[in-house]
Length: 333
Image 1: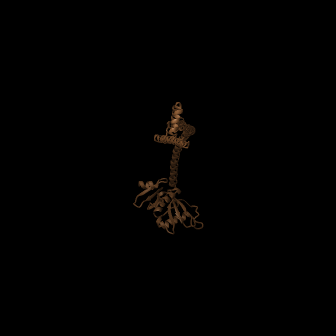
Image 2 (image 1 turned 60 degrees about the horizontal axis):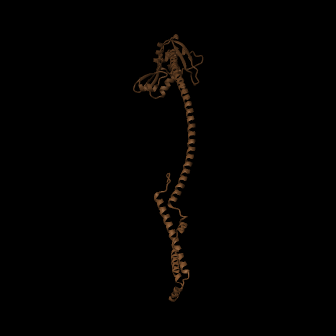
Image 3 (image 1 turned 180 degrees about the vertical axis):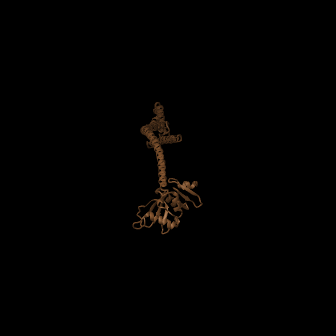
């Protein structure tokens, strides 16, 4: 059979055998029924009584001419009677006219399967063509979107490249500005600190009415530190504004670094909680506080416009305002 839907050969043969057997059984049944009918008919017909010898002899005498015809007629009747139980060709044609032969059955099944397969193939072709058209349309739409995204991506890439160039340029400018700013602040801090190199800061210095700060300071230094100062050794002296209770801090500008060194060497001998220290700028004080808060140094101090720190192993380092302290400690230089 055409296509992949043909019936298996063994099943076809089996059906053919079953059909043939059915046909044979049907014919035999009909023949047997016909024979039984003829026998019944023969039994129901009345039999003629046998003639006696006298009757025969009389008849033979009276009708010698017709005896041959009667005998022939009798033989013909017997032959006809015997032939009544035999199936005729017409009977066979009547019995088998409605029977379907195996070959015809194969042709019919083949035709049905072929039509079903063609219908299935046509339906599948339509569905596949419809699905293919839908897929092609979606692919075309995706292709269009992809091309649009590619163009947009290219434009974005150009913008990113331009932005990157601007950022790199700005970053370099920012780094340069930061470096210059740090250098300017370092220089300004150094200049400010250098301008204070002959200054000292006095804490908790007693205050009284109508006080002459210069005379009182010179007298305190002479009395407690055993350092003799002239009027000209104190260039300027004044108190700083402060919100803390008690005497306000006081700044003293000395004549030169020699006079300051004499006072700073003997400052440990001061009494009455008076303390003397260097006049340190605000940025240097921030650096000193930062170093002390790290708890990595045994001591931190200010000397000669510089901030120093000593570690527990005795290593002594000088720090600037914008140094990376941890990197300096790792490099230990």
